[in-house]
Length: 54
Image (cartoon, rainbow, N blue to C red; front, side):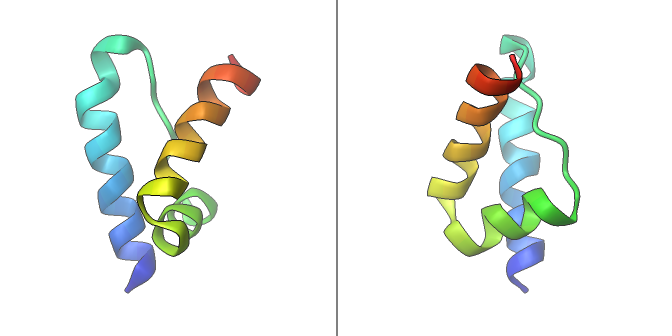
């Protein structure tokens, strides 16, 4: 159940941030992080995508 919620959070993030060049892939690991941590997980994935991965 949490994996599905995490995938939905990531889908919403990718839908609204596509114009800004931010894209977080939706897979098992990212969905698990977003599902377990909630919005904080989505924000942390976005920060990692922007700052670390570039």
